[in-house]
Length: 76
Image (cartoon, rainbow, N blue to C red; front, top):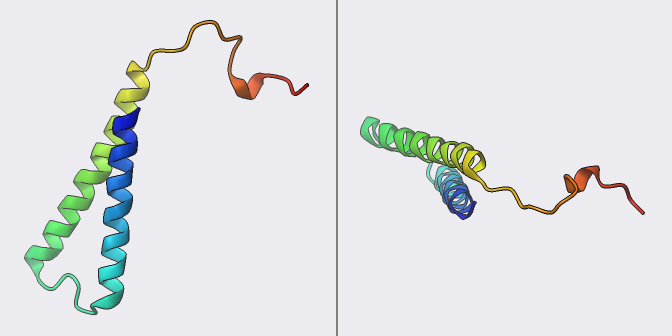
């Protein structure tokens, strides 16, 4: 699952960077080409994060020896 956390962290960093630049510069992104580049980069990062989450959850090996999910364990 580490790959997902890395991709999600990069996506969060990208979103924070875009927010910071957008607040500081009124004309961000400055051109049509820059707008497309920002949009494509954002879409690729989102798709990679979602894809990794789906792939890693589908191929994850489950731990043996447990009685079930922790959320279903009664509080004692």
